[in-house]
Length: 562
Ligand code: TEU
Image 1: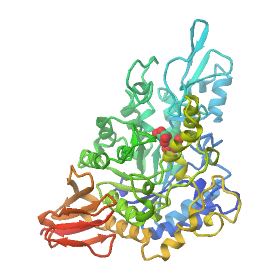
Image 2 (image 1 turned 60 degrees about the horizontal axis):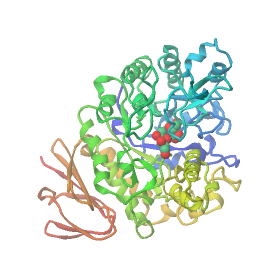
Image 3 (image 1 turned 90 degrees about the vertical axis):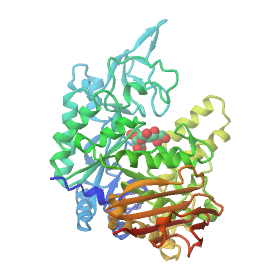
Image 4 (image 1 turned 180 degrees about the vertical axis):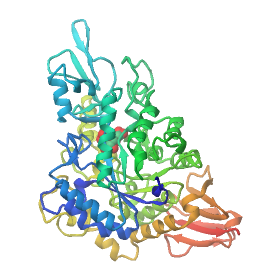
């Protein structure tokens, strides 16, 4: 019986490589996570989403799985995982696992057998096609491009055949047309839910279905060659309904999908409750408001109107039909307080608290990425070799390949790199920020943990963590904050973001100045006499209905109209 617990939940994401290293080998691990569960519980969150913990050769740091039913030894054992599950549930923290089933690692036994035995049943677990010969040259089956640069096809040995990989060449796409593959996936989900896991985050779910027969993409304008043949494919809704029917709907589970450039129509269809596909999906449109065309490395001046459109559109579309998610950071994005044109140096606390209130009091379930609750900033990497993410290196090499000087290419990469989210967590000012007892971490950081860390923040009277506790408590206890319809105000303002949440005669009003200068904004009539619940400054300057908002000031009011 589904209780829809996620509708009144706040979810915390852990990237296990970088959270806490309990055996001092430089890699975060399950023992380390267990040692910090009270820190997470005290924040007030309801559930933890763990990025992949499964066996993986780490070409894409866990998002290339070689065994879906086992834990990678660097994180611990299956026994350790069961202890983690137990410790979480003891603290009434639900556990959400990351499920990467658009592709497997090429180290997965299925793939190894698929490419070594033409008659193996596993050959049809992947998308393997004959190459084309043009002027004697062997070309890939189609002109589809990988998301991580280059062709999406990799030749199998010296044969004329290729396998499809929409990400790294070490991540081979699964053939979801094959009912055996779909059954394998349902069985894997049930394996973990039988253990007590409460839900899943599905990696790039809307790429499962491809258009066949496979052919070239002749579109002139596309963000990725072939996308029209593998994004929101023709059998997506059928596959999700089947997966839900054979697994998710059999448990009180929660399912959230990471979508890859979904159409607005499909984004709604995936989450419509009557469709029984997914409970929610991630929408990232607002996170492209400081880059060109969704390419995080190509910076542009922050556009608050684009940010607001990306934040509010899904709230309006999904209200009354499905559920929504609210996210600013994850393991694929730089730190939010270091983006969006924010003057981080002078207003890190104000901006970090503004982002939390403005984003998480919207309609939907908030997702907080580890360290966001401390207002952690981007890392000052000195050169590309200090970065571990394959995408940073792929794009850096590509820029150099097209003649861009290394220094310039590095500056582009540094702005939008995923690496910023993957440096060790800053717990205190000791060696490696308290991530471990001194062993060099798998991914180095820039020692800013000496200034910004959990210990310092919790001891401060301007604590981002404590502000998050307040916002999370309001989000979980205020009916309008949970169930309310969102109505946007100041739609065309390039400095002010404001909206109300209305539910059964209760109104919440959130207003903020998303700039580094004072801005005056008239509060709506109905706000007069409302209770002020949140203010990230001491007091506020009001004359009549006009409030002079200080840089990155956010105010949250509540009013009951009985
Ligand atoms: O991300 C999919 C995705 O779209 C991002 O990779 C995005 O393209 C990337 O950040 C480009 O900068 C998911 C996972 O979240 C990501 O960590 C994996 O690398 C990817 O899928 C492949 O599994």
